[in-house]
Image (tube, rainbow, N blue to C red):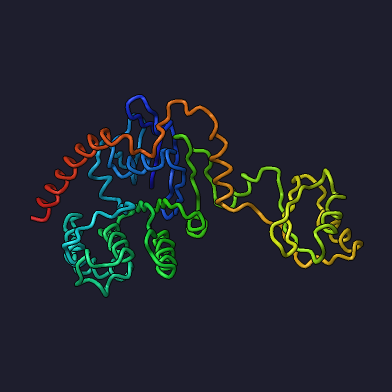
Length: 351
């Protein structure tokens, strides 16, 4: 559904996106991650047609976004981090306005459907400016769903929502993934793990990892395994037992309850857990808890993006696209012309 081939973006002589390629299949939910300055925001803006690329190719549903930008954009729903809402409008007025812009035929049925999906049915008559931040975010989500787009691009969709609302929106994204292609950007990495089928991580304009959340955390751990144990006994006695494994593992204390984090090589003795059990048993120190633990996605993210932290940036843009406002504004002017053309065409079709 989404094809990105050899995508490049320069801002002046600064390279923000460096020859990246990826695809997103129909019905797939892709988590899009990257630290500030990684090129993530630039890539998402190119996908939505908000800014142009320097080189490369982007296709949405087989439509080249450069050759037919209006056709490609008709297949997309976009929720930016700050939804472009009109505070003086009621929710009903705003959603009707969005539906009209997108050329929706049965506006009443569409509004009812998206309002129910996003939980704004009870505030349809209220002015947007009087809504809480959470509800404004929901209205933005509803506008992205208008027109039943095949592709949804969501930038921080749960910002400002309370825990119950976050759970509801996550469930909504999962359900949408059955019939839509979704790209989800979020700084809440546990959210990415819970919702996404696949994760793409960018750093310094390049893709540094692309796989399922489970495989990324596993590969980022490399040759290291981690085990957590809690032992009843004094620190001195516990350390005396662990020191006998010198060379086989390293350890550090996690908390005051006798919980220790042990790390050891993947290729080390597979029976190390059993050896630990008998070593502590011989010392008459009962193990109260013992489990092997994989890296979290947060730890994998830090591991993958920290590898280039101290390297020369090689001409990459340093800030998270904010330093390129002039270039973006120029691109936006071009896109505004395209949007105006789209509106005119849709108006002619309606007439």
